[in-house]
Image 1 (cartoon, rainbow, N blue to C red):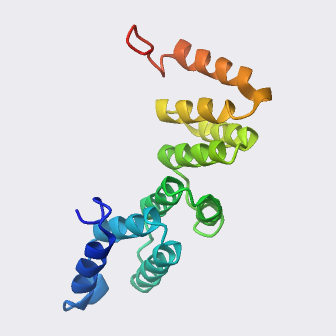
Image 2 (image 1 turned 30 degrees about the horizontal axis):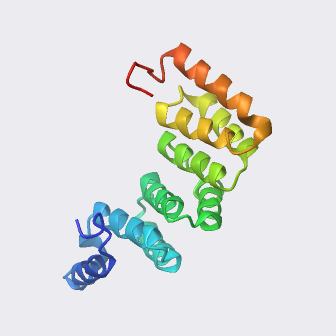
Image 3 (image 1 turned 180 degrees about the vertical axis):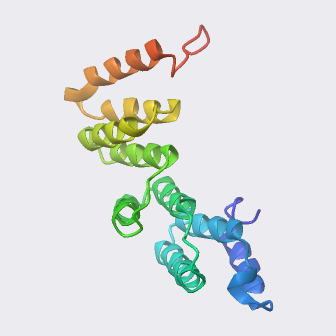
Length: 179
C-alpha cells in the first residue's frame, strides 16, 4: 500500500522489516517485491530499482524459480511513468535478450508510449506490429500508437488510418460522448 501511494520512505522501511524477519528474502511475497521495485522506478531511483531486481534475480537463481515477467513489467512501466526513458529502453532490451521473456501487451503499450515521448513513431509502429503479429492488440496499445504517430508531421496520416482501423475492428468504441 505504501509503494502504491508513492510513499517510498515508508515502503523501504516496511521492506527492511520484512527482510530482517526469519527467512529473509524467502518470506517476502513477490507482490511486495513488485510494488517496491515499481515505487523505486516511479520515484526516479533507478539504481535502487535495479538493485532490488538484481537481489530478486539472485534469490530466484538459487531456488531454481524463474523470475516472473511482471516484475520486469512493473519496473519498465515505472520508468516510463517517471520519464526515465533511457533506462526503460535498456530494461526492455534486457527483458527481451537476457531474460528471453515475451513482453505483455501492457509492456508493449508502455514502450509505445515511451517511443511517443521521444518522438520516434517508427519504433512505436514496429513494436505495435511485433505485438500484433502474436495477438489482437488491446485498445490501450492502439491508443498509445495513435498518440505516438502524431508526434511527427509525416506520420500523422498513419495515426488517422490506425484510428479508423481500430474503430472498424471494434477495438476502440467511439460513441457520442467520446469527444
